[in-house]
Amino acid sequence: MAEDRRVKTAVRRPQRRSLCVEINADADEASAASPGALSDEEWVDSATDSGSNTSGQSKQGRSGGMDHPRRLQDDNEDAQGLEVLVAPLERFEFDSWEDLESYLAEYTKGTHQSFRILTKNTVTARNAKIRPTGSNKPLLPNEWVNYGKTYICTHSGTYKSRGKGKWKRLQSRAMECEAQINACVQVDDAMVPTFILRITSARLVHNHPVNKLTYNQYPHVRTALESDVVGT
Image 1 (tube, helix red, strand yellow):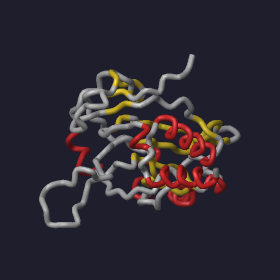
Image 2 (tube, one colour):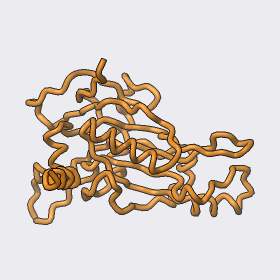
Image 3 (tube, rainbow, N blue to C red):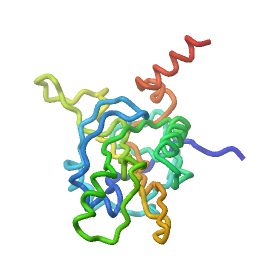
């Protein structure tokens, strides 16, 4: 039976999650990164503005940090207050960052989502903080380069008007969407030690339409489509 990847909606507001338990202690290492291979959209981080408003939201229908579908999206539904839940991830462990991002590229294409990298935590910075403490945490091999990454929806952030008008532009890329995927390198076997890259949390709820038509309008997708046409 073919996999059901239809977009579904629910009336709930998502809450942004932290990268992973250990990265919380290294939060000051995180800094905004240049656009990743998944998207090239502009964004303004809105986590601070939205965090205080979401702490009291209901957690009904959530399991293990993953969101589950409730009902089918109506294409004519008013976008205001919309919450779209997409098909869940099927893989959570990877051999490398390249392996993860190859999977995410395939997954986001199949589900018509667009993510970009918000933060990167480097192995060098993490190891430098651990060494002076005398901690028994194993140091990560330098070949991983990055210890953790946060991927956010292309519609994350708050719209910034360039004019003096008080009304928000209706068709804005920044729509305060809080869909987010967090991944970090973790110890797989402390005795050896060996390491593995894991997706530690996934917030797959969007506050905007998620469909093929919208997906094909993203600049990086449109450029790829135009290249395919030229090559045929």
